[in-house]
Image (cartoon, rainbow, N blue to C red; front, side, top):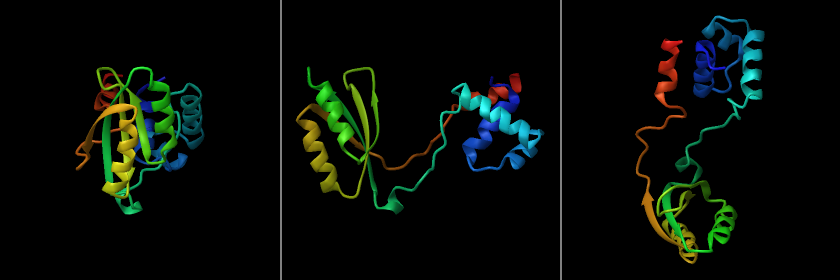
Length: 152
């Protein structure tokens, strides 16, 4: 399902999900209908699961982005998940291995707002908060995915 052409299609869609089938066809040397068919098959097979928009949180009024490691108290996991789901400021949450069972990414307008959220988290878990200063690497896919193109 991920031959060299599909890899190029995926790479182009990662770069710009709004690219036209005609432009994409030029890049991969296929007709627009052939590209559309390949994308349809990638979607149906679950390789492509959706399309998204990247935004600058700071410019939208959320200058503070934090990662919070949460060691949820015994028997409080269900309550913790409900609490996390209740906050619009939670933009990502992973259940991870290790002592810190959850990693929560929050975007807030102020430190006092972050503090208020963390106080509620502390009712159900021990927390360790890290502020994101910058993001030197942000990739949607590992580079090895694109290196496999040469191997195909």
